[in-house]
Figure 1 (spheres, rainbow over the protein chains, first blue to last red):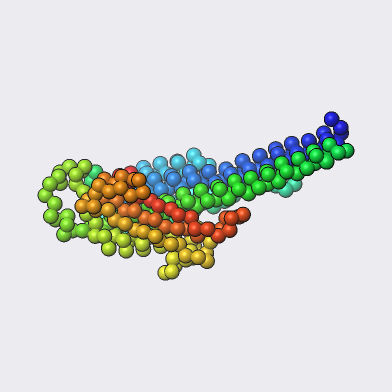
Figure 2: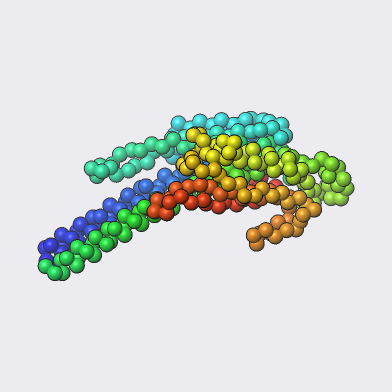
Length: 126
Length: 170
């Protein structure tokens, strides 16, 4: 193998590694977003069936979001609403992840995740 | 030297494939994440329809009231449909023409969201089979099309259908 071919091979390998790392790092926030939405929707269903979030549910939600790596979390939810009242669940939190910048240095990137959905309370006996 | 050019061409093709696959992966992730958010919003909107109970019909029930398995809910179809439509609009951040507004998380803000169908399955419509899904309990079906721009593909409408029933409350 000539030196030119080794040089090309090295360039290709570097490119492949950079793309692989970039892809993984870029994909992480999407997966976190999916998890975040699914957690929030689970608690929207609790708001709907119980009329709001109890202190325990609120703490559980907070713990679930912190486990995801979110910080500066804000939860806006009713505590107890009557049947057929409108309920809004708004949850916000910062998600920080590492990215490789153009100069190949690592840097923090923070995204504000926001979930906001309305429903109506259906306190059904099951 | 001849072989070196083959290597360069080969390397260029690999890098191009990587760039294209990266774009595809990112777009795929965006579509999946958006689809998941829309689904959650539609489920929340679908639940609101269960507040529109057909009291007249419910008062006629005599059998099975003591059993949660047979204690079915009859909905006022037109009221339920209007309520679900209102909350689809609110949860997706749409204006009166169903076009995503500035507060909407749908990135495409020019074309409207198309609400294809809001269908209420009451107990007297059951059992029913819809799109190969067997429905045995009071259910609200919501079918919409979400406008989106996908790199390399252009503008498309992505269909989304959810079935909301009492079991999906928990």
